[in-house]
Image (cartoon, one colour):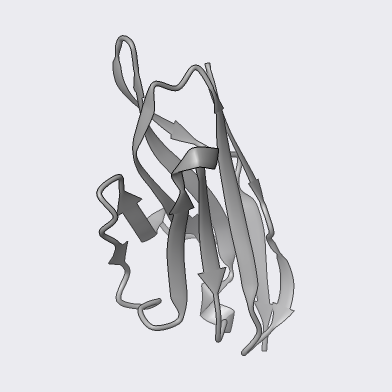
Length: 119
């Protein structure tokens, strides 16, 4: 079994910053990719940023230049530094990991952490 535990969400004023963390634990051989998605009320879940094991990064156009994703592979942890937050960034943020186990690669999700940006 694999668990993803997120932390760092909260309420912040527009223009402020937050840092999300997500730590993976359990029966892990390796992690191929880690990333962050978000889902606002009434909207579909969307990719915010992800980072394959090779170190490249992908960002949604709406967060480029404001958000930075990083990984600590030794700790199986991914971070999302969010700067210059806007009210439209308000959503539940979910951590995602593509985990390699002995029986193959599996997709795991965290429980979600609320980010609320007030105007």
